[in-house]
Image (cartoon, rainbow, N blue to C red):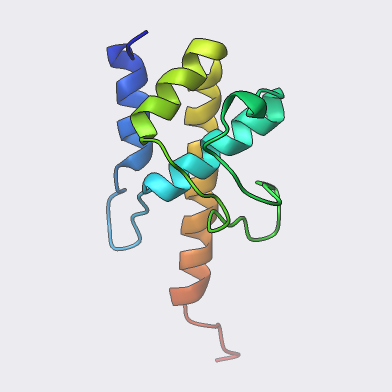
Amino acid sequence: MALTNLQRSMLERARASGAGTLGISLGDEACNFLIATIATDLGINQQFPELRGEGIDFFAVTPSSAGITVEASLHDLFERLVSIAPDADTYFSCLAALHRSRLKYSKILEYQPIPTMD
């Protein structure tokens, strides 16, 4: 089953960089982490043997995608995910927006000057 234009758009929108100097884009590694999170949440992670990792915890204080190893392309994984769970594309889109917001907030804290008493 090939991705629909809407599903392809959702995936590309998640990967696109936001506007401004603090724009956040999600690379393949982050998107694979999101797919692994969704597969784990839905209990279908056995159908994704190429997504191996320990401690997939999206709601950790600092979620990390560094522990995920992937042996397939992002488009193939996303296509399989939506073929197994048809509403997973919406889940992915919402989770990607949340992840981007968390990364942007972290970046803002990094660059925002600390207020002074003056």
